[in-house]
Length: 109
Length: 112
Image (cartoon, rainbow over all chains, first blue to last red; front, side, top):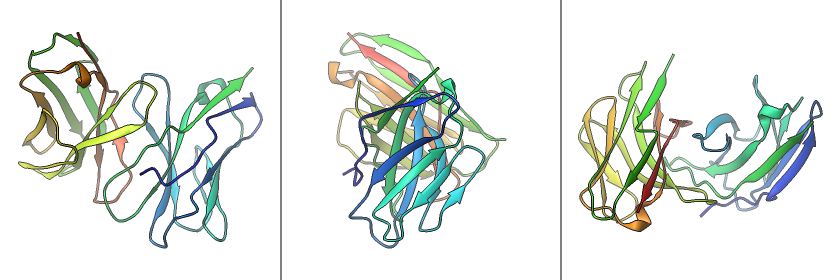
């Protein structure tokens, strides 16, 4: 039960902003939006999470729409090392992360 | 800082053989611990989680088992491996229930 919809793949030019969309139209009021990424053959890496306010950290920004039905992860200046599969996950107060198939981002030189 | 270790990194085992994968966390106390499996080209499936020593919850019935003999040690085992047990096994930890989880480097298991 992934609860999210993401495009299967995206390309981004190196140095440009990468904007990764996620739809979560059935999200409920107490559910958070999490983003992880997985570089080939490595464990997933936590990026950022939020409830309803926009969030920013050293890795990325998370923009959540006012109705909370969609969000966008922004990598401000993509590098080749950002090539990975990006997972958008909605989770509530339980302890399970349901990883779907994510978006495969390719950063092009 | 906290670190999570898994070993071995890769493993090739024949069908019917036993399995033991180990995960340890450093730099934190009483973490929540998790075992996930990722089949090729697919998302992660939660197998087990533990909120304390000796406390194991199973999410998916299967021929695998988990144990937590020490606070920061989590072990995934099987008495007899099946071909369908092949996959990428990931251990993760979190500070608190419902918090973000941090993953280890994974073990790639191939059952032949």
